[in-house]
Picture 1 (cartoon, helix red, strand yellow):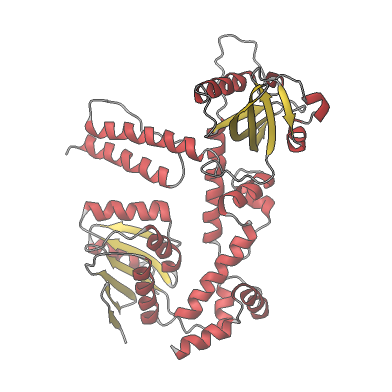
Picture 2 (cartoon, rainbow over the protein chains, first blue to last red):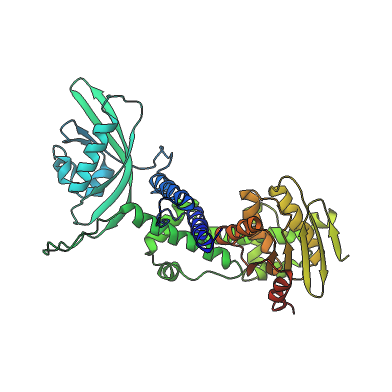
Length: 306
Length: 124
């Protein structure tokens, strides 16, 4: 194997690491398609794309029981015929005004084309058993674009067919400033990539917490700034990814590490508390008892008995 | 007690360094990870050490085992130098460091002497 092969293998390993870290936007640069290693790289790119589709939103993979989703129904002409209040809040248009409006008036042009194409392909046989997963860019009254994901179900009724949508918002973004220069290429916004960037930053926050189990965390605003997120996105994203809040996660990890130390070492309890950043032993003992139902001293005694 | 040997590893402390050698075994799961960390902490008696970890005979740990080692395996370890002579083990460990992210300074070496040199900086 020559030096070039080693370099290519290094690149291949890197994409494997990046995928394992959840960076589905990372790509192997294919320079020579005749090269065996590069072909594996090409396949890895395909895998990254596939995974990206699944994980574009952490809840989008297999999550069908959505809590408090927006819901709306359109008929075969894509006229809105039914909504819930969540959808009305999302679009910031009153219920009476929304009913009868064409869908094209509340979504971007690109999104309308994408939705229509997806539904046409997916429901061409008029089978109603499986919904289609979509990302829709809504245009609320604020003018900002609201990226949402969700499912569309196909319904049949005596008056025709309907499309039933339900889902959740992903992120809001400012409308891009239009340019008058025709030669300037517009880079299309990719909600998937944007969301992946946020997920990567939230994962970095997760690692940051693990690296700081020995001390209290700075305020959320500072953490958010450190990882290029806003506080809302940090709080919401962390909860969605890890099913807990930042401070609860930090506390629980410190308690878990403390329990591990108590069980595995003869270290005095006060030192354990200090090592994991608790203000004092009383504070540590109370948090520990709340979590494990027994005082730290109980586990200390258990260890001695063992 | 300055020496422990179980069915998965052999470990001893000498001149401020903990020498840890993986033995060949079939399945490296969470139970194995817990056992080896537990035995290491028993040997250390509350004192932190830099660790020379001989992974030449290492079996690929499961995901749960890797996560456990990255977090709880870092307890009372000042730094870890993994020593291997095989490219396969080197890649495996690179993956562990890049993805599972142990909480302490960690590096891989193909030379035992270089690994020890790295650890000397952490000896008190």
